[in-house]
Image 1 (cartoon, rainbow, N blue to C red):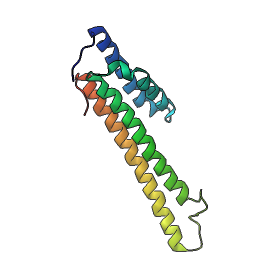
Image 2 (cartoon, one colour):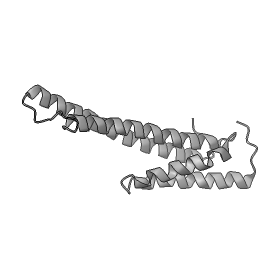
Image 3 (spheres, rainbow, N blue to C red):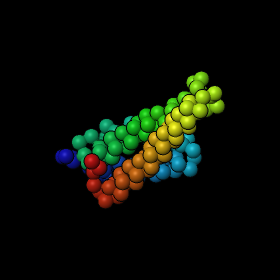
Image 4 (cartoon, rainbow, N blue to C red):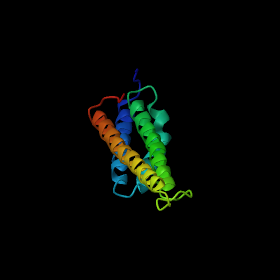
Length: 137
């Protein structure tokens, strides 16, 4: 990638990305309430980094956010469905339905756990690359 931005602008965007990575990490301690702030920040400044290696960090964080949201919602839907939120109950008369509901809830929980770990991994990996002055894949 050709990088034609000034050093001041580059330093500013690097600091900006450090802040967004930090906010993603802090969001784990706020029950995800801060999760929306860094994604809005990324969309607001994404165009400023176009054509530079920093653009990969904006894209990385945006993709991480949206894939995490999609998979987390899938996990929640599975758990809700399994535990009776959509009219199917674990306490159904048939033991096969109850076992299936428990397994489906377990799958939803597994998806949510994997998403949590994957999201944290991507934030850490991206932040390390930013600190090293490298683009992310």
